[in-house]
Length: 626
Image (tube, rainbow, N blue to C red; front, side):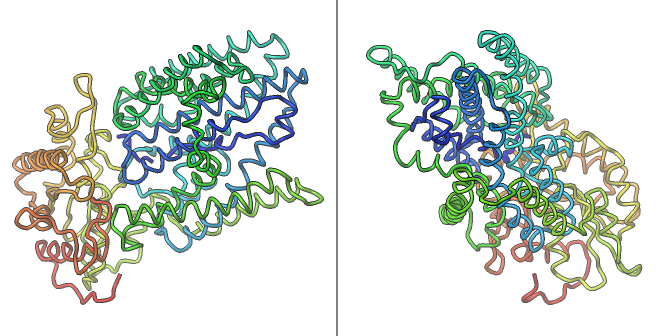
C-alpha cells in the first residue's frame, strides 16, 4: 500500500539555474520565482517525511518533474535557436558537474551507516541500493526487488529516496538526444508533436499498468512517470519567457495561479498515496497546476503569484534544495526516537532539519558550487573523476560486505544454534521480528529466538501462501512458535471501486481467508503455536479510526482461531494494554518509537510478559543490556 513511505522524490533538477555562460549562450534567463517553487516543493516533502505531517507532500515530486522538463527543454531549444545546434557533450558535462559531486559526497556517510548501524542481514540490500543509486537506476532496483515506496514495514534504507533522482538522470541522458535529432531533422513543430505523443503514451501506460495491489509499478516506473517531465517540455516549447505579460492578461494569469495554488494545497493536504484517484488523473491534475505556476513565475513574473513565490525564505530553500534533499532522508533514518531519546514531534523534527540543512549548506559551499562554477582544478579531470567514483563504489562494497541475502536470513538465523537449545520461532511481519528482538534481549539461557518474520508482509497482496509458515516451522523445529501480524491495520485493497481498509466486508474476508490458509497447516503440528492479537498502535496511529480497524482485525483473528482450536491465543493486546490503556514506556524507554514496532529496551516489559505466557522460563537479568 502506498507509504508512504514514503518514502521521497527527486530533486535532481532543483538547481537547474544556469551558469552565466549558459545564460549568455542561450538567452534562457533566471527567474527568482522558480527558485521559490523549488523551495515550496522541498518544504512539502520534508513535512511529508515528518511522520506524514503533510499527507500529500510527496506530490512535490511532480512539481519537480514538470519544472525539470520545462527548464531542460527550454535550455536545449534556446541553444539550438541561438547556435543552430546542441552541444550534447557540454550539456552532459554540466549535468554531471551539477549532480555527481554532492551524491558522491554522500557515500562516505552511507558507508559509515552500513558499518556501524545496520544489522548484518540488511547490508546486502543496502549495497545494492548504493550501487543502483550511483548508477542512476534506483527506481528499477526498487521495482525488481519488489520494494514498495509506501511500505511502512520494510526497514528503511537511507537511499530509498533516490528512485526519482534515477528517473531524472535517465531523462537527462536520453531526452537531449531526441531533442537534438528532431530539431535538426524536422524542427520545433515536429518536436512538439513527438513530445505530445510521448506524453500520451506515458499516461496510457499508467492507466494500463496500474494495479491497486501493487501501485509501486506505476509510481516508480520511468515510463509511467515521464508524463510530468514531458508536459513541462511541452510548456517550454510554447512559452516565451522573455516576453512578460502585462495588464489584464497578467491579471488573468494571476487569477489562474491562485486557483492552482488552492488546488495544489487541497491535493497536498488530502490526496493520500494509496488513493486510486492519484493514478486515475490526480497526478496529471497537479501537474497542470504546476504548469500554471511556472507560467506565473516566468511570463507573469511581475504579478502577485510570482512575487509570492519569490519571497526570500522560499528562494533560500530552493538554493539549498538539492543538497537538502540528498541528506534529509539519511538524517531521518539515523536520528530516530530510540537513538536521540526524543519522541516524534517538533523537537525531533527540529533536530533532523537542523542537521539536514547544516549538511546541505556544507555540501553547497564546499562541494557543489566550487565544482559547478570552476570544475575540477586538476590536470586530468577525467582520470580524477573516474578515480573518485571508483573509490566511492569500493567504499560501499567494503562497508556492506558480510551481510547475508534476505532469502538466506533464516539459514543465517539457524547457523550456530546449539542442538540442545529450545527454539522459539516468531512468524508474521516485521512487528514479529521486533518482538523477537526484545525477547532475545532478555537472554533466556538455553532458549534461542529465531526471527522468521517477513519485512513488508501484506496478507492481502501476498495471497494465501499456504506453505510459507509451515515450511519455516518444519525447518526450524521449534519448541514453540508465535504468529504476529500487528502491521495488518495499515494495508488496504480496492473493492467496489474504492480503496478499502479493515472493517470493510471485502477486506475482512480477504484477511480471514489468507490468515486461515497460512495457519491451517500449523494447526496440525505437535508443538504449541500461538497466534497474537493486535495491540492498539501509538503515536500518529493512536486515534479512533485506527482503533476501529484494529478491533475488526482482532475480530477476524478470533474467528479464524475458532475454526482451528488446536492453536493457542496470545492476547498481545491485553499484555501491552492492561485495562485498555497501552503502555508507552518501560523503565523510562519508549516502547514503540514509531507507534508500531518495539524497541529492545522499551519492549522489555512486554517481552517478559510474553515469555511468562509462553512458559519459556525465567529471563536472565538485563540491567545495562541492549
